Image 1 (tube, rainbow, N blue to C red):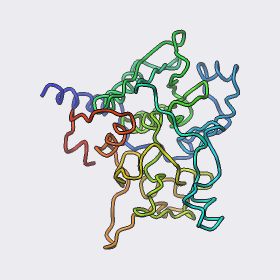
Image 2 (image 1 turned 90 degrees about the vertical axis):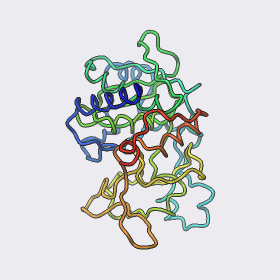
Image 3 (image 1 turned 135 degrees about the horizontal axis):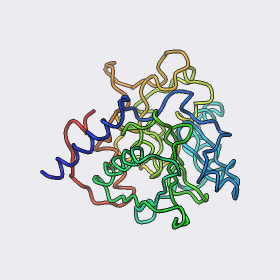
Length: 299
């Protein structure tokens, strides 16, 4: 009972700190950072010592050149060349999980206590449903691989624990500071792509390529990911885009496939059971029952 009360207090604080509507990730051009822009301080420190231009931004996901490959997956070879090029992309190397589920992180210089508190509450939402541990450290005591959290020029994150010297999670203020957006980006940092990018998605949704904003097609391409194909596809996952995300003309970019022709809701505001089930399987966590209210799971 006490744990459940603490959970609701945490959610109340998340809502108190931000009057914005909770959305999985920013869908506006202004909130998607330029490929050529870098954040200051920690990121600037590393940029002076390494070539951060190797990091490429696709929507709210950041890759290194070694992690990204434009070649198609083997199971698409029977499709025509143009469709394959447009529809599928796969990482050269498997996305790496964080060792023992521990994510060392450093807040960038200049972040406020209020911003840090909001991010820590979002971390608790994940920790209480998994064996993941977010471990704050200092810039001077940082380990070889750590997550640099900054108020950058958009909502985006690197995927998993990359071999690149720096893992980045950017949260533009105030656009990206609702709890759902923070949890969404943290799941990217833990190694997850978007739900609509899973290899099995064509059984459940249709992508309307002609309606997608130029330069944002990558967000809708299928990728080989940590999530096994036998895991349930959840159209209302926190990691699933909504019907009109990144639309260039006001028409839907994603439509669900229902045999009976009924409408369906795509995307969600909350971390759902399906999301944590996938997370726990990837990291070998024992399932937890903490804090699963019907309201939190089913929105």
